[in-house]
Image (cartoon, rainbow, N blue to C red; front, side):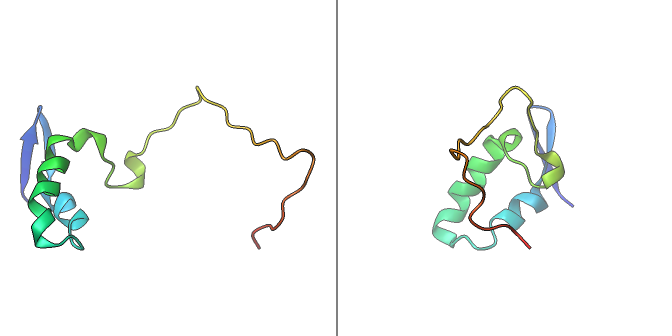
Length: 71
């Protein structure tokens, strides 16, 4: 597996290429460059996603229950 390094973090080029599978050739190089230049801003696996407890989200349903629940 090839890798490149940007800002001392190794870049998994296989992950980048897998994100580009459905992109047409005209846009692929620009998108590849964007992803590599901003590699630390992207999550390629769900385990790389962060979370926060700083924000709490509430939806006011005005006392109404759910319209439909998952089975």
